[in-house]
Length: 281
Image 1 (cartoon, one colour):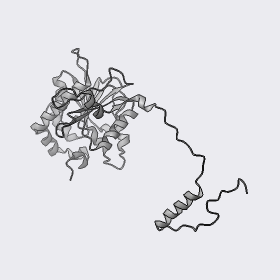
Image 2: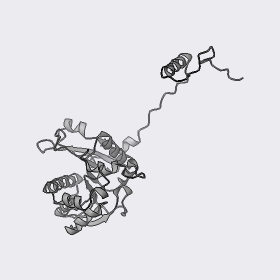
Image 3: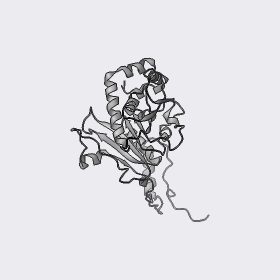
Image 4: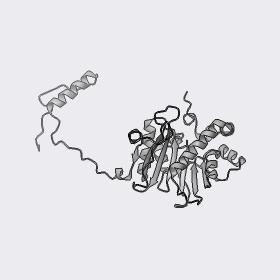
C-alpha cells in the first residue's frame, strides 16, 4: 500500500483528530515545515522594506507554516479543508486568521488584497478525484490570476507535475518549477513559483539550491527548472497537412487483411473493392 496520504483518503477524512494531533506534535514534521516555509518565503521575493505583508497560506493545516510567516513579521490568512487541523491551530493560538474551505473550489477573497501566497505540501491533493464530481484538471483552476505565489509540492509522478504546470499556464501565470537538491533522492524539494502577467526580468524563475546549499549552475538548473510562460499559450499552431489523395485499393486490401487476421468478419474482395465512384450516378 502507498504511504502517500493523498492516496489513502480525502484530506478532511485522513486528517481526523488523531492524525492531526500526531502530525502537529512531531518534532521532525515541525522542523521540515519550518524549513520549507522559510524557503517558500525566500522564493516569494517580497520587498525588503520592513513593511508587513498580508499573505495567504493555502492548506495551512494546524498553522505550522503560518508561524514562520509570523516570525518574519507578516500577517496571514490560512485556509484548510480539515476541521480537526484548524481546531488544533486554534488551540495553539496562532496569529493568523483561519478559514475552513476547499482550495479546489476557489477562494472567496476580494482581488488585490493579498500580497502573496504560499502553500506547503498541499497542491498535490487536488490531483486526486475523491468524489464523483471532482475533476482534477478543473479543481486546479483555483490557481487564478493574482499576486505572486509559491507552492511547495510533492507530485507523485511526472504526469501530476505536468498537470499542475499546465493548469497554472492556462490560468495566465508565468513562472515555473524550482528544484532544490535535484540530484538527491532524500533532500530533493520542488517549488512551483508563479507570477501574474507576462515574463520579465523581475518575474524570472529563481535557481534551485545544490548539494552545497548554493544556487545550481546554469547547466544543472536548465534541465530541472521548467518554465511556464503566457507567451507559450499564444504561439500559432502548426497547420496539419491535409492530403487530397484518398485511400487507394492497396490500403483497403491491407486493412481488410488485418481485420481477417483478428478474426473479424470481412466482406470478400471483388473487382469493385476500392473502385472510385463516378462523380454522379
